[in-house]
Length: 566
Image 1: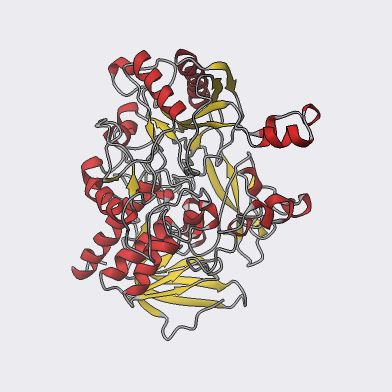
Image 2 (image 1 turned 90 degrees about the horizontal axis):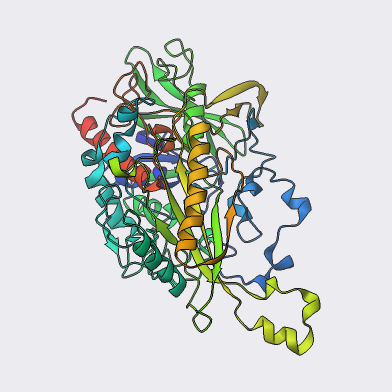
């Protein structure tokens, strides 16, 4: 649907409604700015547009499995995995296609809320180990900020979204403002004890997640998690953080937000005399009508690659190679997190134990490589963490011929063996040659150029992955697990769903696109606060950092507007 607007002029325009766009909208609107929020996909309203939120497997054909004929329309999106309970939140590749000079798993959810509806909710702060890494290693460019610059904004965001977790006091993984942690099960506790007994540089904790575990949080009636583990369908309780349940309703409540879905931003408009952006040009997704909207500031939060594509498309006499691209770095330095690899095993002695509910979370083992002088690894730089969980298998492991009738029924109701699995999340370095670019020879249905990805993991990532697989095996064996097997599953760029880095922050306009407040060096009233802004990747899930940077940038924009600097 399209929204009828009474004006085409606003104080601010926000492009995108995912995690970053929602936060930009909330902060700008709460600061009194009349804000137009643009989303290229359809409207999704909290609760009423979650069609599968309460369905059980027997309520769906084929127990929710997507038929092969339908799945064929999603050759790229299905790499991450979806079924009929979540497919409506993933892009149709036949409409939103892209090209791969090298395989790149670009998983997208184009609707109001974006991927905040389907994200993994893992929520970790960065530290100066991350913000100083490029400078110390001589890789890429130095971050223009340090932990002290973003720490108050981490706290600001956490108090709002609700982060459950355990305080550890680790300098390289700062503690958040926590709600009570979710509980480890008995086998995870066993593994935690085994790690503490065998290593003095490693710790296992429950995952830090944006799930309410006590009380309520601001938004559309947000209450505690019900342990259904149906998060990607949309949560009717608002228990996990999403734009739909939290920031967008709060922006709307101010009376300052106008939201327009089905609005494809084709470029940012520019006044060469004032050296400022003047607004954006859009294409209506339904009518293909071209429209322009004016504003004092523009926030690009369309997702890492989409925000950069908009800047690349914003060509003019002043910016022949794309807005803000004097450095030539726009589109370069693509990063992600490498995963796909770890170990699994089984354990005896807990057959009389089980767990309650379906916990939407696992355990986390923070980085322990290259943290300090005693943890240095000689054959790679940076590090990795682990995510994993333990649980009991079920009757699906049973060979059908071995039981039938009464015997089969009895087996079906008996929990299987305890198994554990852990997988690594490794940092990817910012290589200039890892890039995306626009193909003007292949246009999409709206006449806009399509994106081509040319990025890959390199030797440092491969050596790191070899180490985390070996260490996963060793930790499980030392903790008493049996039949420990390594997992060498291959992965590709984009597959971590943490793509970032194509419009990086930096101190020098000659080598970076954005300054320390996420402003384009050359166009200070344009802010980019999604993953495109990242200068390095860390090994922690990045969404919390995107949110904190966005809140910080939005409040900076408000101050600068009052000073009439923008």
